[in-house]
Image (cartoon, rainbow, N blue to C red):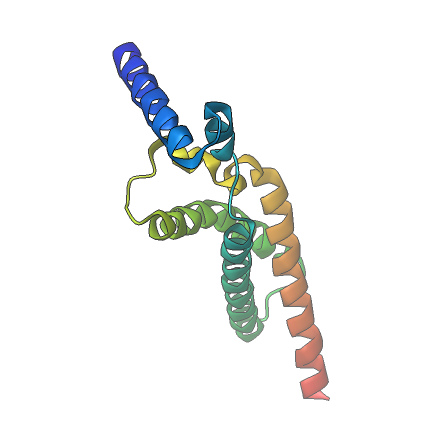
Length: 146
């Protein structure tokens, strides 16, 4: 692995020098650009997945009504759906990043996907989203029944 790391670093240094010359910037600027992400793309990935998760929560809510689940199951199902959501967001983000880059080989670039570094926050957000969809579904159901 040490030889691989040295070869990779040498190739990247050569590539960065060529890119810097081609674009009239410093090598440090080229290296810094690796940390910059397309914010609109990242937000669209997150919100599209949140929409899918909300749809799943809604469908689970409809199924739960048929089985007459107790209200405490809402908390449990929200936690399970949030945990699954965190894991599936990794797959969703990786797939979208593959499409953005144009190939299926992310390698170490996959570490730059922002969600990979905020899993606990995502879990909390997905749990709240699931719970909110379920509660809104309960409210809408009670309105329709009356």
